[in-house]
Image (cartoon, rainbow, N blue to C red):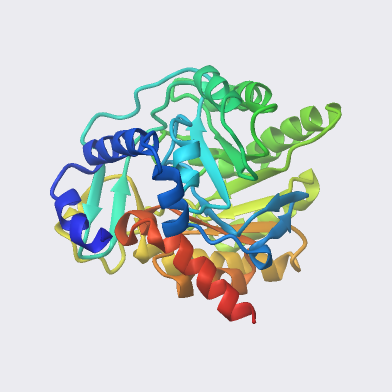
Amino acid sequence: MYKIIKPLLFNYDPENIHHFVTGGLRRVNRLWGAKKLLKSTFQLDDVRLEREVMGLKFKNPVGLAAGFDKNADLVEELAEFGFGFIEVGTVTPLPQPGNEKPRMFRLPEDEALINRMGFNNQGVDVVADRLKRVKRERLIIGGNIGKNKLTPNEEAVSDYIKCFDRLFDVVDYFVVNVSSPNTPGLRELQEKEPLKHILNTLQQRNRKNDISRPILLKIAPDLSNSQLDDIVEIVKETGIAGVIATNTTLSRDNLVSPLKTEAGGLSGKPVRDRSTEVIRYLSERADKSFVIIGVGGIHSADDAIQKLEAGASLVQLYTGFIYEGPGLVKKINKKLLMHNN
């Protein structure tokens, strides 16, 4: 079915069609019998798919990456497609419009996307209020947090604290995003000292609560091995739960699309192998001492299994979900059941 409608969807501007489709999903989900139909079509509920990671029980290891549902508008609706967890955001303390449009581009020849969205979101207060009303039904929700564009890097920690405090009661885990290429200067926070400062500060607040939330760090695929060694050291030193590998890349190697010169972060198949390399490197260097969530270029069940075999405990979809359609989640879970038998 998706193969039939995909060419039509791809005729329209990526950001506009995203809002059109997600709005339609919200309306369809209210129809009588819609949830039952979606469940039978897209969900695979099997105890063998369950994973206990970071002290949380995931009903399956396939999640939706941050960026698709920035404002927690569609958590319940997207859960109908069989995801084991959904990550909202990136969320910043204050609302911000993001970069000028157009800011998202399809590269169908490369099965990729380029985006320079710029953390467009409605602000942490709106997202927190929405998440309070979400019916969980065994769904794990992550909160991906960032800094506002106008906040200088020297004050970035205050933005992460605001988001952390506001979302603490409504998410199950946090992701610190310092790796988006679309906020000026943000990637400088991946450097050792500023990163340790942010993570240690969040961990101090985390430990003051009666319960604590797992904190993950989302990293770029463009880091060198020596920088990845620093990441391993930082994760161990700060005691955070682990890493999400990886965000989008600035590389344009081997692309054929005429849109390859557009500025922004590249996602999809071209980043698949590099993200898997980063997962394997981190897993081996850390001797599997922390959690890795694998994301980047998963367009098939085999792509997901490769990341799990490289050392990831869970995987996330974004661009593959757009190119392959919502049936991809079930395909991965089916293959996992076969693979583990």
